[in-house]
Length: 54
Image (cartoon, rainbow, N blue to C red; front, side, top):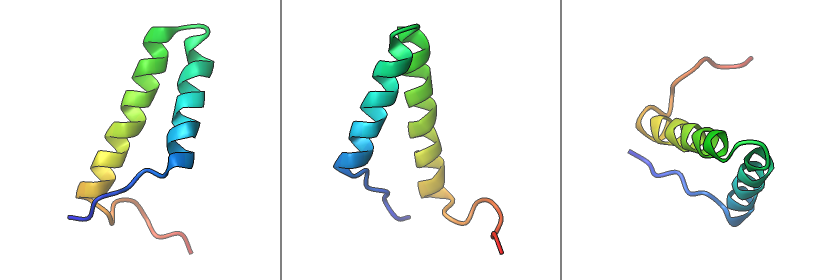
């Protein structure tokens, strides 16, 4: 199983997303980030998930 590394640029983007959503709802900001990180973990386990785009 390969590990996915999050670049500093990506980490900055995630923080910006969290701050933007957090202006209206801190709860949903955390939920969105949690869902993104969960998707990354799924991709680590199943790197060939999804379909091939021609």
